[in-house]
Length: 344
Ligand code: TRP
Image (tube, rainbow, N blue to C red; front, side, top):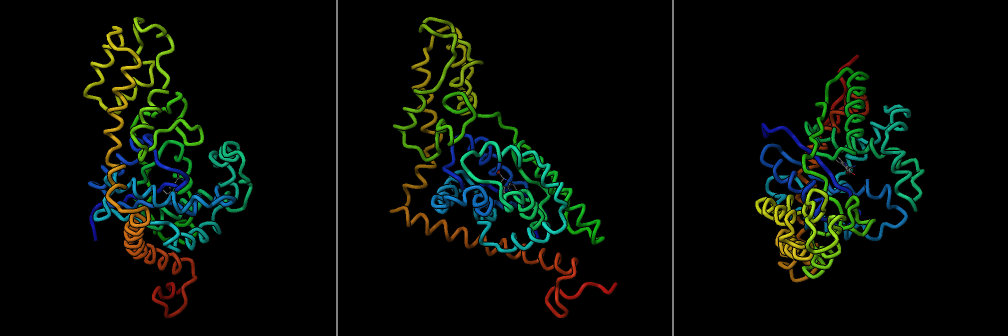
């Protein structure tokens, strides 16, 4: 057994990954591999909860996302990379936790009402979607994770997970789960090319697997300092999204770029052209990872191998936790591997 603390995180396969995922998630996951025993999960059941009416893209997104994970340095030799639906114990624990989670707790999760409002065009008033954070709690507790790297929007789900763990411990008088901590990502928010939140639904994202031509086009469409109208006007880099990208993707050159913008030594067109070069370089590993394979199906086969190996490793842990859970809640049959509960 590893002495490292355990880390679990997940991502829903609902579209291609973009630069925001690189700085907000992948770089963080990559570092965590050094300090923790990591489990990284493709949350396909969670994706289905919102995309069930049109699940056609789901499978392709799974492969595309994992291709980016691998290209971004998530290492299957160190971390367990798996697909949620390959480990049926997630649903088993989800059922157990659903039984003991009071309805009021899930109804008041703020993300629930928000998502109902935001994910327009989908009917999310379903029985399953209400259970979204309970399934997430099952994901985390199944591996007895100590830490969960997430964005700020996920904090209510972490809080609910802790409450559910406490309720389980209180009901059955057994401390089965460590109380998981959120590891908040420190990275500054990356805005989309139009200055709004980067999101595929706004069509303002630069995908990690984007071709160089497309990156140039997207960079040229970026908003700059609105007060800089003429080429000779001094710029305000702090108010310019392009200058902010320089800070994020080429910090060693950002001071010079910012100064040249302030003094009008550099124009916005040049600034975007040179930023394109930087972004093309930053995204090179993601294109190269795909180019290594003769075809999309060859890449999928390789990724499927990674996922199957990950699922086998994940299941060993998941099975053990479920055996314990079943014993504690009185579901294990006498003489089963789990064995009967201690006589009361
Ligand atoms: N709800 C998370 C999101 O949308 C994805 C997720 C599912 C997750 N299960 C998880 C994140 C477990 C952390 C731990 O980003």
